[in-house]
Structures are given as C-alpha cells and as structure tokens.
Length: 379
Image (tube, rainbow, N blue to C red; front, side, top):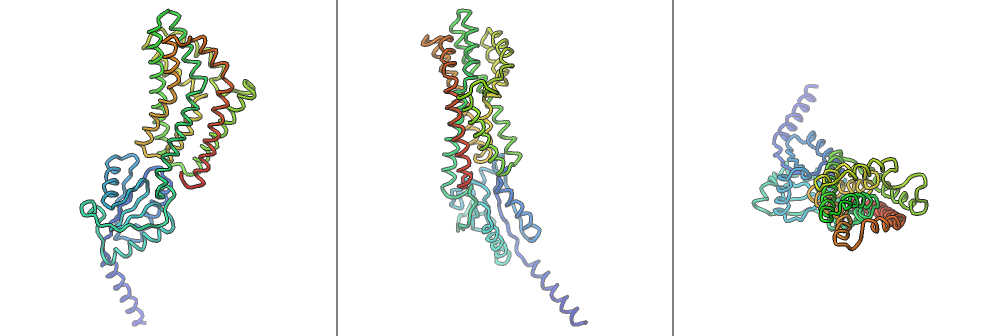
C-alpha cells in the first residue's frame, strides 16, 4: 500500500515538473468578425487554452480594426506569404491558413513541439523573417487563387445587381415628375441643377443605408444558411419581376405601391428649388425602397460574406454610381434638348414590361450564381 502511494506521488511530481518545464508558446491569430471559419477556429482555440496553460494566443480582428489589418499585412509579408483571407494563424516560423480538422491536428502538434523545444514569437519575424510555410487543408475562403476569383465574382455580382436597380422604372418615374414640375417654370438650368441635386441625394442616402445594413449583417455573424436565403431571395425577386412582364398589374407589381404614389407625387410637385430637390431626395428614397431594395439586400448579404470592410465600401460606392447613372443621363438629355420629360415618360411606360423582364433574368442568374459559388466553396 505504502509502495503504491509512493509511486503515485512520484508520478504526480514528475508530471508537475514536466508541466512547469513546458516552454511558453506564443501564437497569433488574425480573424474577421462574422466569418464562420473564424468562429470555428476561435472555439477550437478556447479549448486549446484550457488544455495548454503555457499557450499565449494573441487574437487580432481585421475587418473592423485598421491597425490590426496593417499588422496582419506586415506579418504576412515577413513570413513571405500573400494572404488574402482569414482566419490565419502564425506560430514559430509556420503559417496556417483557414480552418479544418487537418489544421486543428497540425496546430496541436506544433504547440506540443514548441512547448518542448521552444519556439520564436511570430512577432519577431516582422524583423527577422526566416519562414517555413506549412500547407495544410484549407478553408475554402482562403484557397490559393480563390481570393482573387472571389473578388472578381463579387465585382460581377455588384455590377449586375446595380444594373437591375439602374433600369428600375420607379426611379425614372420619380425623376421625370420632378423635372416636369421645375420645367413648368420655364427654367431649364434650374431643372438641370435640381436633377443633379436630387440624384446626389439619392446616391448619398442609398450609400449610407447600404453601409448601415452591411455593418449590421456582418456584425451579426450570420452563418452559411443566411447566404442561401439571400440567393433564394434573389431568385424569388427575379421571378416576381418576370411575372410583371407576363401579367403586369396582376396581384402586385415590383414598383412603388399604387397607394403611395399620390402622396409621393404631391411631395415632388411641391419642389421648386435646388436645395428642395436635394432634401426631397432623402424622403423619396424611402418611397423607392419597396421596388429597389431587393437587389441591394442581395448584394449587401454577399458583401458581408466575401468582402473586407474597405473593399465593401468601394463596391458600395460603385454600386450606387451605377444605380444613379440613368438619372444623370436623363437629366443631361433633357437639359441639352435631346428629349423632353413627356417623351422620356412615354418611353418609360412603353418599356415597363421589358425592363421588368431584363431585371428578372439578371436576378435569377445572380441567385443561381451564388448557389454555384457556395457549392464550389468560393463564398
């Protein structure tokens, strides 16, 4: 009995000595808030901290913190890696990109090795880069070459959805009513300025709404199912637009509700100045939401999944520029006498069904494209 107790005590002593002799291991993780792969890695790291008391993990969020993003870029360059996605882990002279079962196993082995032989703090590589890159099974988000392809797909989707919004007959109708009102005073120059002010107001209001929704979606950290819902939404809105081509006015229409139109026209016809046109643009943007928000929400969901904040902001600027481009063109054509508000409105009414058909086809293709991209692991 006494011998057994002594053996147990000896084992505990050896274990405590071994544990205390374990060298400190420092690991850097760069992640993005709202990234599902990052969320899985963070849960795994929480377990590692419980198992390895000698492990220090420095975690840096890069979507919303510019300083962390700069450190990520500096460390990536020091390690000789061009890394375009998250999560990314640096430990000793090794880099782990993405997260999978293989990455989890490799990380554990590396931590245990470093606890025995001792390893460098990854921060030191920013000064003295001597790196061995470990290629393991990666998260689809960070597969080599996919980051660039993903950006191209996202850019194409943004341009396509913006084109759908740009040809929306709702925005045309509102601008034409506004210009007709101001031209009734026989002041063509003021009408042009009012058209530009109104367009600028729409641009600003839609951009700010986009930034707010993008931030909310990303901060919420929606999982993959959310993007499936967004893809389904694109297809449904597309089908509704095609319905308007074959059965315009039946059940419902993908435009400003008819019950809203008298009030909106009253507001527009009360505008008589350029500042008034700018201010009224913010109000009218709310009336336009039912018929213009569909493609925008689809794109915001896609950007929250695939783009960093800075890149998303650039794409939102581009999206809204494309969205208001027809308004700028119509204003210019009327100002230079190429057409009149009467002719522009006549053309708009004659093309209503065709515009809905084009919008519907583009949105359905966009939704299908998102499903294909998810299936291939690109988003």
